Image (cartoon, rainbow, N blue to C red; front, side):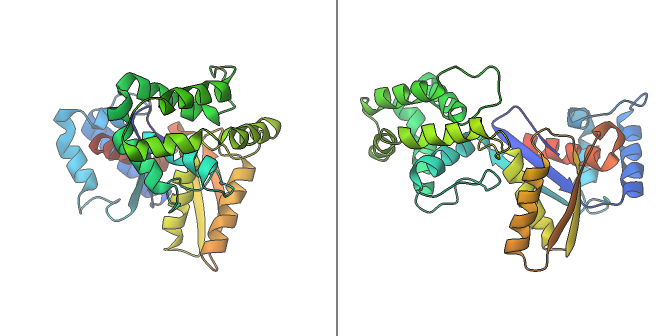
Length: 278
């Protein structure tokens, strides 16, 4: 399960049988003092008075000890790294791949992430991050009508502003990338089935599949319902793990209603705890 409208996106997974997960969720509900049959989310377990419950859940006597995994994404770095991977790496970018791993563009993304806000001011930098994220988004009705034009207008203005040398160099390189941005955006508008580039859930789940793929030949995933998890994108992840782990197979990704699936509810608890810590 992933989550969070916050600077950190947390995607958690647990390896546990359905019956054991149901028993654990019921135990947590009793400890929390839950009433009725409604689904309880991670904020309920993160209240200060419930700290002992959290410590037990993460401790050595918990059924999920050694059987839980969390993938954390810094959403601001994600946007910057994905932007530069697409525009400056010189290679095609897969939406399921984690950004920021390209040795050519990673130092550029880090330079922007660490120094650009100080150079341009918080308000201007936040606006640039929003424009960067919107550049390759196509499925949000709140998007501006001219995201490419708005992004490159901001780039031009920033290129005229003094900044740290490494930041200035990256902004200067971005000025000539508009044809790449337009072609990339056009391809996604023409083919909505293409994996979105600014959706952190997809790389997070892909990395989760690779993590658990180290422990088993055949992997089956139960995931909360997400519109981004289309059959084509799940098949792309299956191809990726088969290519990188000989003999490993992603047999299925089954999407479920979290209200009826205790394994997903446990993952939500773990994701919320990790996001709070991060």
